[in-house]
Length: 140
Length: 404
Image (cartoon, rainbow over all chains, first blue to last red; front, side, top):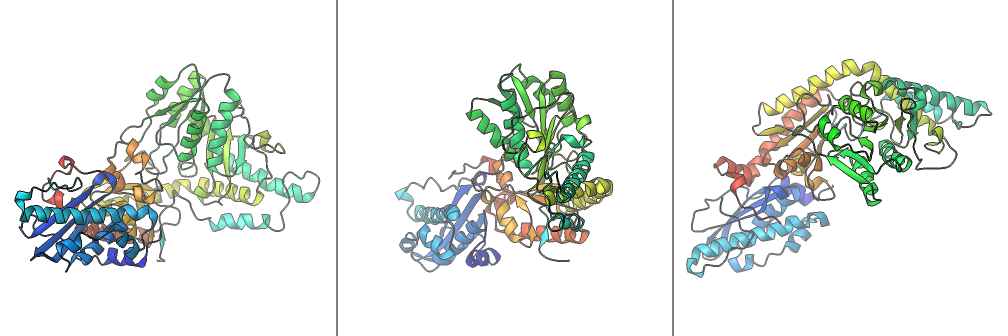
């Protein structure tokens, strides 16, 4: 399969690859996917005054999955929590020129964003007890 | 050393230049139809085919009359399964095959199932071998055919074909063997193996694409087939159609070269393959061998790199042509059914890479590949949340993953 140049660029030069401390109050973590399915994404945001000041990812998956999550971290930085919630998988598909068989990679990235945002929201509003999305797996 | 490097020789092989040289005259001067009995052009073509038939038969210890030319191993497999079932249908309605067969056997078997034939798919052990005892106990009075591959195309595991052949003979059941990956690489003797039908092809052994053969036993027992293609009665009526003389001549030459060079080539390939394995596993942790450590093709190495996805890994070493059992490299988005049949977890199946060394693989290419694989795996593990969790002591099996 031929990859788009943007996917190759993200693969070779992943943006914001790494981890924050999951326990930190200003960090939201989303882990989605499953090893059996061939992709697992961990996306983390660091929030100050409702604005995402930093984001990091780690991904087990194909080049498109890596590129989708790498791109997501770029887009998250500087957005407010609400703005971040509006990132759509279709935006990622368009930006990276993903073929139909790779659309699930972008869906996973959107899920990871939502999971990270939910995790953060739970931390700052513990009383709201917002249910984690089924995709958020943080019991590791 | 030239890039890219070709290390996918289970998929196909380049034509040996000596094979091309043998073929060339048959495209131009010696272009006759081998079935033209009345002029010298036809005789020349026939001579070329006759020699090739002898060269091919010699490699597998068969009689040249027992070689039926086809378009390739897929056609041979189809002809063997469908042709035997149709011919012997009144004798029984059951065939036996294995879970790790190539699609060219599995799919015809499935197609026969749809037509009411009962099919047993034998499971394999952790190293990918069919247990001959399982074959024995699967045989019923309805069984008309057993089809088990000689060597697996993904993991290179070699099956105990002679033992299975003995059981088939004892029980009076016809035995077909898909030997596409084995012929030309390891010694094959249709008498010793007790096979009645055997498929193989030219392009896996440095011959041209588009030609293959089905060995069909003529004596003890005399195997009969219903042809899939009618028209002209070529190849003892089993496969009609004008013979592709240049391809057949190339196939014959390829077999002759394999026979002459097999002993030395086996040693050379095993040395390179073992160096590749040792070079990678001595540096990287959690790399697992898929398949049998000893009973495997000399040029095959199939490794799973834990915490790294296969397609991403291929992307990281894109100047080396390799293959992966990862779902992402297949159209179905399912990981390799062969590795799954071995009991390899889906996670490790997604992480598998097949190295296929061949006649033109050099020591320099192997060293380069070792170096590139180590760098790519480290790069991806650095990026892998699974690797991070494992390093933190998290048992990945205990995590409740959300399947998607």
